[in-house]
Each structure stands twice: as structure tokens, then as C-alpha cells.
Image 1 (cartoon, rainbow, N blue to C red):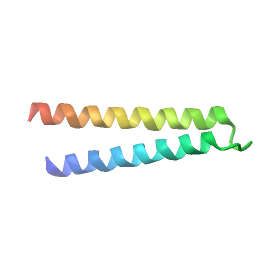
Image 2 (image 1 turned 180 degrees about the vertical axis):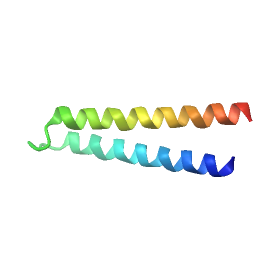
Image 3 (image 1 turned 180 degrees about the horizontal axis):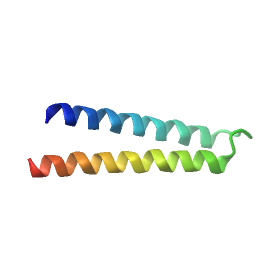
Image 4 (image 1 turned 90 degrees about the vertical axis):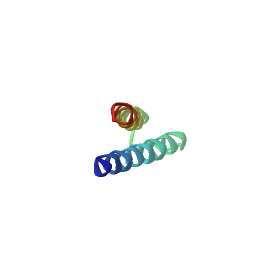
Length: 63
């Protein structure tokens, strides 16, 4: 079970760092990639972070 928690924690860190990266790119004045694409990527990474945190929470709650 601890290996499962470590994997989920690594996924959370990866998704969170991706979200921060894309949000920082969104703040810069760049023409490529388009801002809508960066916004979508940031949203996907943020959603992934939230889902893995929920999985960690419910796994800890049940065990």
C-alpha cells in the first residue's frame, strides 16, 4: 500500500508542477503556443492534481 501512495504522490507532484509551468507560460506574452492551448493544458494538469489528491485522501480514509 505504501508503494501505491508513493506513486500517487509522485503523480500529484508531476501534475502540480505541470500546472504551475503552464500557468507561468500563460502569463508571458508569447504568440506560440496559443493561449487557449496553454489554458487547456493548465486545466488538465490542475484537474489531474485534484483527482490524485482525492485518491490519496480517500485511500487514507478507507485504510
